[in-house]
View (spheres, rainbow, N blue to C red):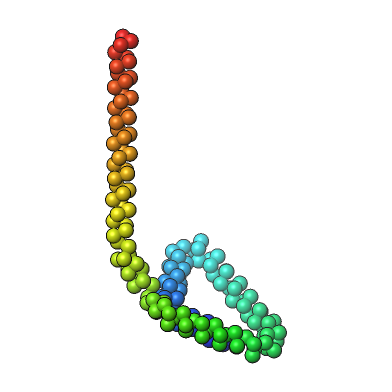
Length: 147
């Protein structure tokens, strides 16, 4: 195609690669589960591939004069990606490892939130039971005094 280093560089970032691999696995698994999913997916893939080939054939003569400018932009974008990578080394960590670390770091928050949820649920349940018992007692008392 055009040989942009930015796209290759993006794909080589661990978190991007592991995420796209996971998405691809899920997509492939979904296609394998049912013909109703596989047929439209295959059709969309065929249309996308044919469209890309046609677009490249038409666009190539139009884009050739801009190659130098496009490569300058590509070089700039690649340099910015390298800077981001050095500033945020977590992007070189596989997605699962990032998620595991996130879960470990937020475990105490989840524990507190679950405790609050349980307390709130218990309080609401207790209040509901109390209202039910008061209403039942009132109905019994009212029916006792009428008869």
